[in-house]
Amino acid sequence: MPALASAGRAVLRDYGGSGLPVVFVPSLINPPLVLDLAEDNSLLRWLAGQGVRPLLVDWGTPTPDDSAQDVTAHVEQMLLPLLAALDRPPALVGYCLGGTMATAAAAVTKTAGLVTIAAPWNFAAYGTALEPISALWDQAHATCEQLGLVPMEVLQSGFWQLDPKRTVAKFERFARLDPASEEARAFVTLEDWANGGAPLTFAAGRQLFDDFFVADLPGGGRWRIAEDAVDPATLPCPALSFVSTTDRIVPAASAARIGTVRELAMGHVGMIVGGRAKGALWQPLADWLTALPPTR
Image (cartoon, rainbow, N blue to C red; front, side, top):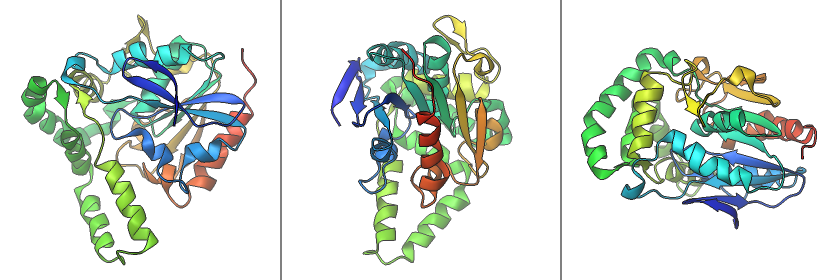
């Protein structure tokens, strides 16, 4: 989609529609297009016909020259300038780590509202699930520092270790499908997304593993954006949080719970693109966004 604004390598893509601008903040991990997975399975395209104007942050592809940009820098140097380029305060909708970042942005700039979807905030709640992730980062740290980047393969192997049996089981199910079936094609499309994407900058990977997963700066109230500590409890805007009760990537205990909380018994990705997503998440999200009071 066409770029409405840019900040460094990040651009804000315009999905049309009219009404309240709604900026979708995807994770830095995996491409942003899970929100626009296919023409017949696209949250953003659907929302464009529901009385709002969806805009998607595309983080672009970092190079080793960007190695010093951590997660905080992505918020301060890219996300906040993109929001400032709009002619009115938008609502923010953040998915996964994008929800963590959207929460930080909402704490320091005027927004019409904030929605988090499976957004990690209380990282200490991962508990022992962090052990294989920490071991992986210990092994990869030196190589990633030399590269200036954290390759997607490092991140994806960390996700696999959260639930290796489920990873094997889903490919076993795929092996039993008719390769020409719609279900098989949808599986391939989703796996192409899940296993693709740009690397993280080294600093973003280091901050994610060391400061978030291990030190839990967000959950402990010690993550600072624009010199201010981010406290979700004091956000000056309406908020809605979608929390999955069956998520292995962002367990319910670790997820942001800001404002009104809606719990869904759906997986991390299924709540965005699964067969029940439209009724369970898309429509309630549209209803909440269109009910927000106007801002100037």
